[in-house]
Image 1 (cartoon, rainbow, N blue to C red):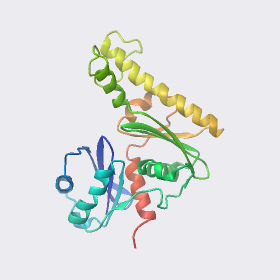
Image 2: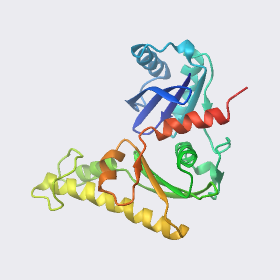
Image 3: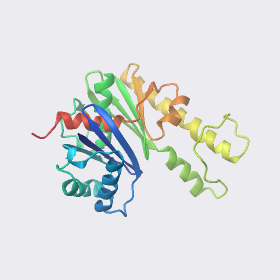
Image 4: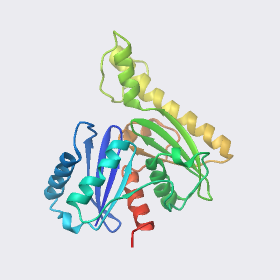
Length: 256
């Protein structure tokens, strides 16, 4: 079995694969105050709930955009699991050619997503990941990772309104019935949800224009399911794309 770990700024996602099948997955809040031992205990408890023995884990694939936690996760993997993690980076075989000006700056989560999407759908393809930031990645038909765009995430945008505008409340991110909000809350929901769908569609349009062709557009991340129905360009939502990419890259770079 493979344990896939995706460490994001807002959430840590764990998944356990038996071959290509995802047996279980969990999403927990990223907490910088937690020690690696605390996370390890939490992980072991979650495995027990699903009746998965840690002894059955033969590999660990790790992607992280929070350097202290990424480095620290080598600790619980070494201490509580039978093998150290394979940490994702641009240097691993991914099936892609990284064409960014500085490959070291490309987040491992973006490479993992792009590799999984290209393997499943081919190219040209655009991957939109709705995380703490919303990222757009462009991959050509030849598997060239060109780069993309980074926008403030939907939750960050909502929190900025609440924190910086004295009379605007904290709101629930749900779709309003109409674009014309009839009170402050629905007006904010309209601006955030429908406005964000417009942001996605415009960036996709510009990327496709620069590529000179239409692309398949796949979305992932915690808020993908909220925005995708309002988008004219997103073709499919793949909730576990990052975990699938971790499993793919681990298989391609499996230690002997």
